Image (tube, rainbow, N blue to C red):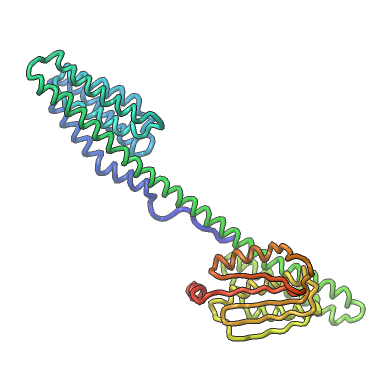
Length: 380
């Protein structure tokens, strides 16, 4: 099976880390703050019970908010805290209970899909209106009542809700980054599969064309030159065995092309097809570029055997480049060779450049890699 890229990372996803930190750091703080509100506002056990219901609603909303699905519990928790606020103002005589409605509203409103601004205004208006209702049961110190029950609760609510909007944007960015990471992992898997498919095509496609050529030659020689036909059949057998070995190495990510072996193989194939081949070595090929140049040579050899009517092939090697020229090109526009197109993408992905030209009956394929690519290949 082809090598794959593991899409799951060993580290905990960012969203899960933030959720765990929120629950660890802020849930206890909310519980303590809620307990203090109940202790300050309640004057009897049944008032404490009612106020505690709003604290429980806050904790439930916070847990679901940290998990990313606060809207599932938003309505019942809003109803509970919205009912407790007038109870606190008119019955318990305390302005501290706005804490619950403020928390629930700030967690819920930024998560709404639409009308968030209107919801924020409605919440602030409700807090202020209910707080002003304290004047119905208390006519002493009106400025103090307005400050304690209207100004402070409304101001804190507006600030809390306002701060949660950029907080939501932050979490949206974290979510987008997580999704981008997952897409990048999926893309890496796709690239690896395409690379594997290209390598498999190089191995088996090349072999099948060579086997076809040698089989045709053996059929011609079977009556006139039995020994040569046997030799060709033996070479076919060896070639198939070698291809099986290379396929296994590819499947277990152990295959590396050897340029010298590919060069000798190309020479033998061209000569077997009656094509004169000449190899010019301008310099020793750098080790880091050997495998990439071997891929270019193998694909080009296959294309010449398949598509060209060549009589001569010239292969020129330098330290980090290879050029293959054959005289079998037709005097027509440059044909579309899918194998070379795929190879061009692979060479470019490794930082090199592949050029294909056709002129005056000659077909030229050249590939070169800069020095930094060679160094990168050596470090693999």
